[in-house]
Image (cartoon, rainbow, N blue to C red):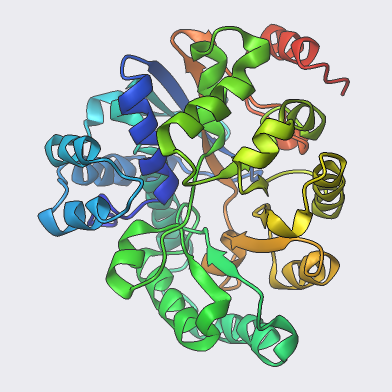
Length: 391
C-alpha cells in the first residue's frame, strides 16, 4: 500500500479544500492526467494503479491527524469536523489506456470539487512509485544518497547560505514514499534552519517540520467559472482567499494568466494585503526583477515581501537566484522533483490539472506554454482576449 495516510499530501490541498467547503460547496469539476515525457508506456501498471486507488479510498483521517490539523490557527473547526466524516470515493476516478495507442493512459477525475480535490497528489505519487518499481527492481539508493550529499554540501559548505530557506515540494513526483521520508530526515539533520519545512503534511507532523503551502493553479482556474465575470476571476480568487484566511497564507500565485495579467490585477491593495507571491513558470530571474519593480512602483519596500521560487528548481539554480535577490527581498525556495526523485533515472513529468468547472472549460495561460492544459482552443483564445495576452 503506497499511501497509508490521508495526510500524505500537500498542505495547499487542505487550505484550498477549506475554501471550497465554505465558499463553493456545490462546485463540480473535472481533472485530467498528463505525462509530458515522450515514449513512456504506463498501460501495464493500470491494474496496480486501480488497486492502489481502492486502498486510498479505504483510508479515513485518524484522530491524531485531525488534532494536528486542528492545531493550525488558519484551519477552522467545522472543516476538521468535516474531515472527520470524509472518505474518498473511487467512483470519481476513471483510468483507461489512451485511444492514441501510444502507451499513454487517460486518468479522469470527475465529481464534486469538495470530494475530488484530494485525489491529485496521492494519485500522482502512486503512478510515479509504481512506474519506478517496474523500471528499477533494485533501486540505486546509494547513488541517490551520493547525489543528495552533493546537493546538501553545496549549501552547507559556506556561511554564505546560512540565511537561505528551502522547502520540500516533491510529494507528487517522489521516487517512493520510503525514499521521500529518508531524504527529508537527512535534510533536517544536515541543513538545520536552511530547511524551512515541507509541503507534505504527514511528514511535517511525524518529524516536527513546518508544513508549507497556500494555493495552487486549480483554485484560480476554478474561479473562472465561479466568479462574477471572467475578467475579474483572478481578483475574485484573491479576495475570496483573503476573506477566508484574514491575513494568513498570504502568498499569491502569479502565473495562471501570465505575469503581465497578474501585475495588472495585483494592484496596491493586493500588494499590501498579501505577504508575497510565488513563481511557477517562465524565467525566474526576470520574474524576480519584475516583482521587485512592481513593489517599488507601489512604494512598497520589496524587502518586506517574500518571493517564492518553485519552478523546476535545482540546487545550483537556487544558489544563483539567492545570490541575485538575497539583499533585495525576502526569499524562499520550494524544490520538488530534483530533490525527491534524483537517483539516476529519468523522472516522470506527470501532472493532474483541472480542465472543467461547473461544466465550462477552465485553463491557465502559463509563462511556460508547455504547462498549459486545455482541450478547448476556442476558450483559450477567448481567455487570451479577455486578459490581453498576446502570445
